[in-house]
Image (cartoon, rainbow, N blue to C red):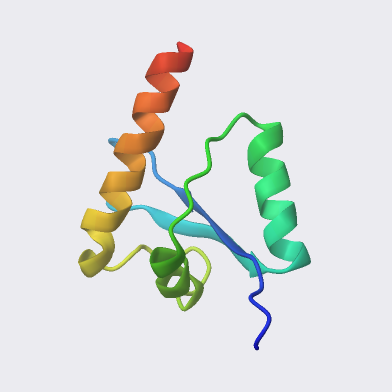
Length: 89
């Protein structure tokens, strides 16, 4: 049975500035752990989506996400915005 390596990606999006979210970081194994660690240290909420991480992993760093990913990423952004609102951020 093949070992499943942890993967992570970080997106950046500033409403009113960015045309679309950009891939800020990506990695697997120790790099994925570090991405998650940095996010947690900065109070950034994490959403697990294995199918989306596979697609994001194929993008180049700082690349805007392609239009076919807008819906999936929008769902994650809504999730994060709701959590931020609950936390009073």
